[in-house]
Length: 172
Ligand code: ADP
Image 1 (cartoon, protein in one colour):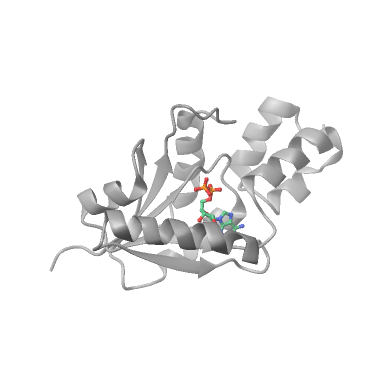
Image 2 (cartoon, protein in one colour):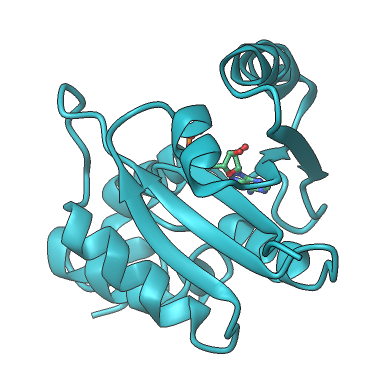
C-alpha cells in the first residue's frame, strides 16, 4: 500500500499556535502516514522571516511528531502534492471570511491535481483569531509592553525569541 501523505502548505511567516494546533490535530488522524508541512516560496513576495528562520521555527515544534516532515516549494501546491503522490492538501478555516478564497483555491487545486483532495480543518476556538499578520502587529506595535507570557499564548517559544531579536525583547 502506498503511503498516505497529507500536505499542509502555508507561509508560516511567522508560525503561530494556530498552525501548531492544526499540525497536532492532523497528525492525530490515523488516515495519514505522513504529514508534510510545506513552506510556499514566492520569490516576488517579501517575507518577514527568512526561509531558514521559518524552517527553524517549524523544526522546533515538530520534534514530538515522528511522521511530520518539512519541505519547501516555489511552485503550485497542487503540483507539489501531485508529484509527491499526496492524498490531501490540508487548509485551516478560521472565519467565514476565509471560506470564499479557500473554496475557490480548492476547486483550482482539484482542476490542477484531480487526485488530490482538500481537507479543511476548523480552527480551534482558542486560536481562531490568530493570524501571522495580527501577531506581527502586536509584536511590532506592542513592543516592550506585551509580555512574553502573552506572546506565548499566540506563538511557540522559538518565535517569541525571534520576535524579541527583531523587535526588542518583550518584558525587558
Ligand atoms: P497562507 O499564506 O497560505 O494563507 P498561512 O501561513 O497564513 O499561509 O496559513 C497557512 C494555513 O494555516 C492556511 O490554511 C490558514 O487558513 C491556516 N491557519 C492560519 N492560522 C490559523 C489558525 N489560527 N487556526 C487554524 N488555521 C490557521
